[in-house]
Length: 148
Image 1 (cartoon, rainbow, N blue to C red):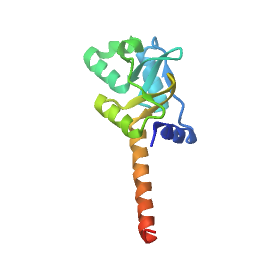
Image 2 (cartoon, rainbow, N blue to C red):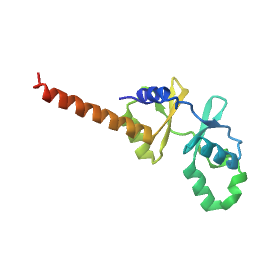
Image 3 (tube, one colour):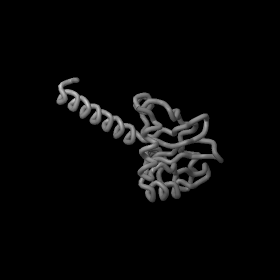
Image 4 (cartoon, rainbow, N blue to C red):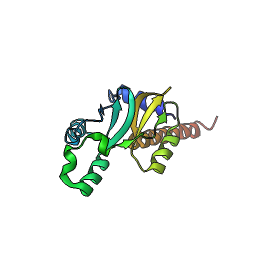
């Protein structure tokens, strides 16, 4: 299964829009965006270019390190610059490996260098479980039909 299939499922659920911010947005406003959309990360774009990703984990770590003063800082000060991306037609297994190895939960999706979506580890795991359940049902049906 591919990342394209995950994005297609998200589009059916009207959940495909990528929430993004500019690099100069204050962290206090980023928190509002995260809470409003009930998401764990936002892409930081400069025009159409992905310049970073800022997650709730990044904010929590900065709060612990620097205290409430980070709320007045810009997203560019806390974001992970030049985030790892995954290609639109990449396999879900490869995306899961990238996220596991990198120890992050969100992965921008690109096609021909252009942003087309964002997937989370939850999206990938959900799709892998759905695929495994479907395959199990197909095997059961095959066996029940006598394997013919």
